[in-house]
Length: 401
Ligand code: ATP
Ligand code: MG
Picture 1 (spheres, rainbow, N blue to C red):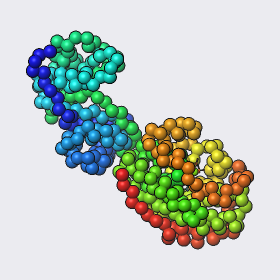
Picture 2: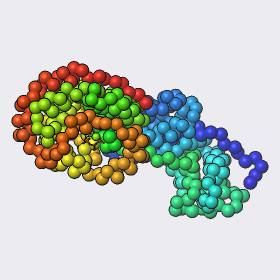
Picture 3: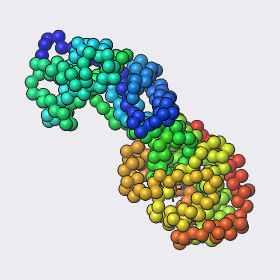
Picture 4: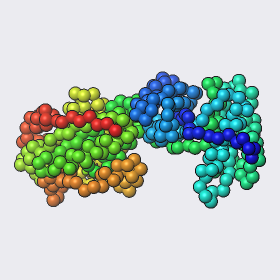
């Protein structure tokens, strides 16, 4: 090694990659715009940033704290991967010096016991650059490894992959890739209203639909005074935790006890849960029509509990005037729990608090609910009055990260 080895400060910029191949025409422009907007929104709390579009990537230049900016950007939907990076002019000599510094830094951070291997992967979008990507890879490989012993060049899964993005505007060099969540930017597919209980399932359902581009609001039904304040706090905590992924959201808290009392007093016990759920669908539909959410989302999963048989799901959705998405329909409980752990909601959901649906729970719930029976029982209730009263008493909270 030469004596005047370049030293490397903290990362200066962040390269953000997204899956553009699946996108065509106008969709792509919308996608990029929304992604830039969501990134700015998520990052501005950490530091002011400038975001440039660079053929299939975004280059984020923050005023400071690029490392934190990278970690945060890796939790924005639509982002495939993120690299904290350093920049230099578009000149082979400058790139070689920077690449060597980035490599030495990565080498020093390699965990003990990991055999040091590396490859250079250049990506040259600026065709005026005097070398092809392959030539640049070779040139940089030689320059980076010059005088260093014991590091193997390895094409497949090297311990260090040194990335070099050559763009007209300049060059970015990086050695770390943080995986993003993928999906589509929140807001590009419209707005959703997720029925959020305190359980494990519904936060996962919300996350999965947000991942596919829905901007989510939440609605929780609360049986106060039969169930305490802690259940409500739990739903608030869950909604806040989901704002890790979309910055802010609206949460509707609906007083549900009067509806449950009416159902308990007038309808057969075996139909209680289905009738509760139908009222939830009605109220959520009505609110979404008023406030502009396009679709409802629930955490129902086929066959998981008695209220989630095909017949009962049918009874429930017939009460909705919006489409109902059930992203968990085909997942096993273990698969749902694995996602909940990954997205950070499991720990919150797993604290035992009673849910409103445990109030006046029947011993033998009907398995094959019949829609006409639901309607017959509901004709004994003042459905319209109960719905309007509940909506008039809704509490609306603005949740932020
Ligand atoms: P979760 O873990 O989401 O509570 P679960 O398996 O316990 O799901 P249920 O309690 O039968 O399932 O509820 C099915 C779905 O109905 C929930 O995923 C949620 O979308 C909605 N839901 C149930 N209770 C409530 C509530 N109190 N407030 C809002 N939505 C609810
Ligand atoms: Mg539940």
